[in-house]
Image (cartoon, rainbow, N blue to C red):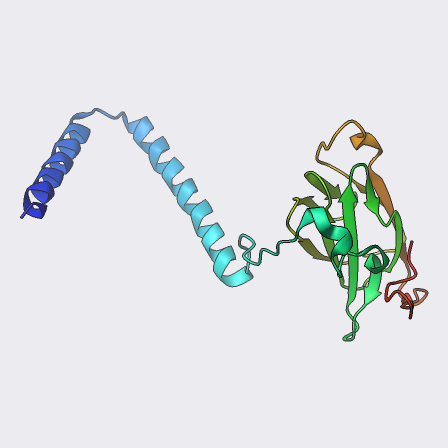
Length: 200
């Protein structure tokens, strides 16, 4: 059998390596720093593992694809479906498209202290979306849907900025979100003709 000689060869190589490792002189101070470094690495790996199992912090597994070249033909991201919409269950969903050099729609109104779901797509190149003073920052990759759940804690004007260089007009790529007090916000009315919202 060929597995026996290869196994013996592997064991011999391992024994030789351990013998050479024991022959190396490691100063006591170096040994302490190596031990400390390995403990810190072990701590970080442990924290990541605990977060993954108990807090649900993990890489995105639900990858939703879309054809960026035909967004205008897509039912969900058609022009009259962009902006703020309330579904049958009362959840607020905001659909936005990033394209050189703007976010569409340019302005939306959303309620404060309310769970919101943003769905972003790119019509051309890689874009980023960042809303200062919030935890919202993500990449919008062509061919994929970026979905973010967030809440705006207080009313105000929030700029939407592109934080990935996308061309010469990158500096002028922005949009605006007006966050209105929850009690003053009214849900957009669906248009009976187009089936979209009355947002810009």
